[in-house]
Image (cartoon, rainbow, N blue to C red; front, side):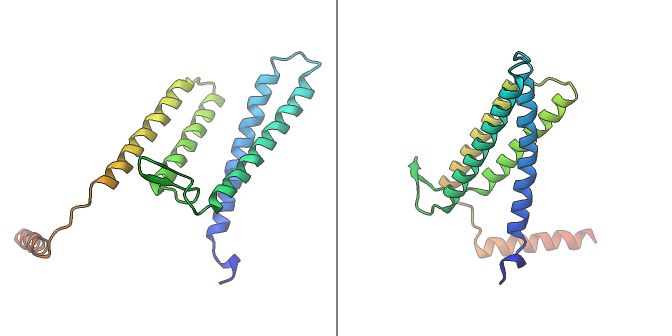
Length: 167
C-alpha cells in the first residue's frame, strides 16, 4: 500500500499541527504578558529570547517524543508493569486529550476575562490521572467474568421469552 493511501498519518499530522498552533499562540500570549512587566527598552529583546526559547524547547520535546515512540524495549518497570515509549494505554491517550481540552477551555475563559485558579486545573488533572492509574491496575489484577455456554444460552432464552410476552 502506498504511504499516502493511509489517512492516519495525515490525520496525526493535522492534529499535531493544530495543537502546535494553539500551544504556540498560548506561548506568545504568555510571553507578551511577562514582557509587559519589563522596562520598555528591554521588551523587544526579551520577547525575542522568550519566543526563541519556546520554539527550541517545543522542537526538543517533539524530537524526544519521536525518539520515545521509536523505542520497543521497555524503559523501566513500575510495580511489575513494564513501561516503554511505544505502548500507551488507550484510556491514557483519551485522558491526555481531555487535559488538552481542559487547558484550551481555560485559555478561552481567561481570554474572556474569567480567571480560573491553576490549582483547580492541576488538582483535576492529578485526580483524573490517579483514578485512571487505579482503574488500569484493577483491570490488570481482576480477570473479566466469562459466562458458561449454558448460562449464556439460559439468559438469552429468558430474554427471548420476555420479548415474546411483551408482544
